[in-house]
Image (tube, rainbow, N blue to C red; front, side):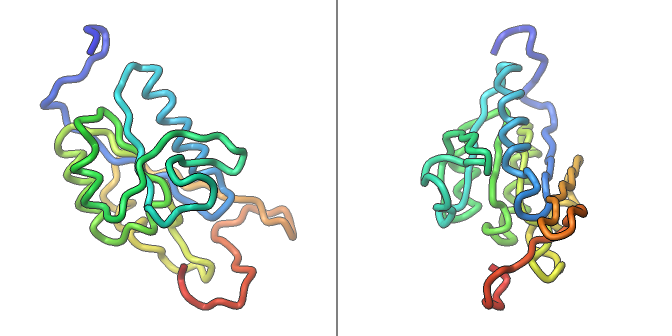
Length: 169
């Protein structure tokens, strides 16, 4: 690490949550924050759930096709094992990790890591989509983004389901 980058190993980390509905720009914002960390010469690792195969298996990709290499993992606990002492850890599609992600993020932050998490905070019914609400409660910084309703043009605070399925996912 270069001397002009002020960071010590006993410095506390923190948790940032970027949440909102589908198409609100969560992944785009996650990628922007991670890019800025790299400009600041910080080491960055990014993780996503292995079940996220919407674009490419080993990248997080925003809807505008901006992509970043990422590591797909089966469980949140793997993030701690694979973070490798990174200064900044990004997690995309965090709603698919389950409640263990909260403690994983807290552990990383306690070890001095900045953790940036992006995910849906509500399901299509407007109900809390865990673990994002729990992460919002323990995060130092929360950014809530809104999509634009394609029917009326108003801000959309939760996603609309267009299929007949009734499950949360």
